[in-house]
Length: 349
Image 1 (cartoon, one colour):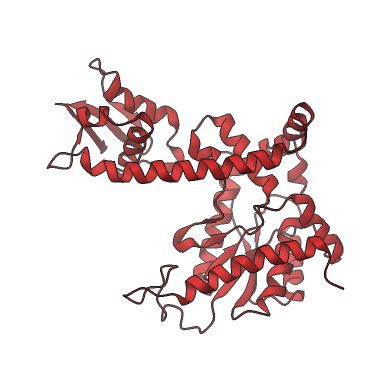
Image 2 (image 1 turned 45 degrees about the horizontal axis):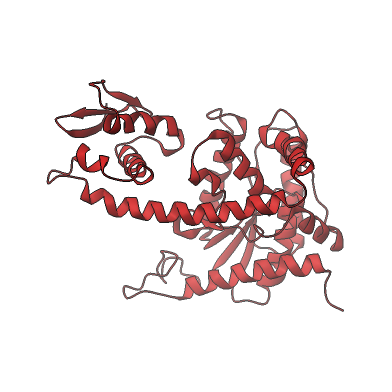
């Protein structure tokens, strides 16, 4: 008799990602560089290491169990990282317990990492930034080829709705990528699986899980969306909202990637011989492409991408499309943009 259908589903999803990781790790280009950006002698290890980021919740415990199971059948090593954000009483003890559970699954190396969460961008964004910084550091420390994250289709739907609420454009609607990060480090095997499936997999395997109280705390935007917003949408629109939002994410990502590629190609054509942006040529671009060119140029001059919002780019765009002699536009990172002699001048300071 085979495994429970939910267990089979999570294992298949992880198996596909691990095969991709192995293929990229062993494929090298003419200069000896692998598809993941490393070289065969970068780590000195014969087999790639894949880590799972595990909070102890159902999603990440299901992912950890599937990774441990599949790694035993493949030519790779599997380990785990749990991050203690220090935001709740007893978090250090819980992190140790999660690390022990991963070790019991057969993962090695396993590490519990404590971080200090700042305040920039609000509590959710600050915790996320601290977590990813810790995961990046762990990957470098252990020489990991990839880190698996347990985001599900439900998480993707929530991310799309949050992007829609911010009005940040099609890139926000594209949600989370299945592969992201430097050298394609982060992989999300469960984006096509719902939260209920991974929870069933935990029950079928009798995996102990921890339900983070922050996930039900109405003080957090994502928690309100999860427990109030999405259920209200499903009540009003019928079942299938989560699947439709996840599908929207993929379609939006395809469109956003195409527009980004167009903007990258167009940027060189709208600069003069000195590399300055020419307003007349910018004006001739489609708005979606022009704004991407402007965003790229502003970030290149030092504006933090995470602090650069649609309203900032719209103001810069008005220097091209609604020029009435207005002054410089102040942007995040002490960057300013001004129109001067038919050129768009963007500089820091």
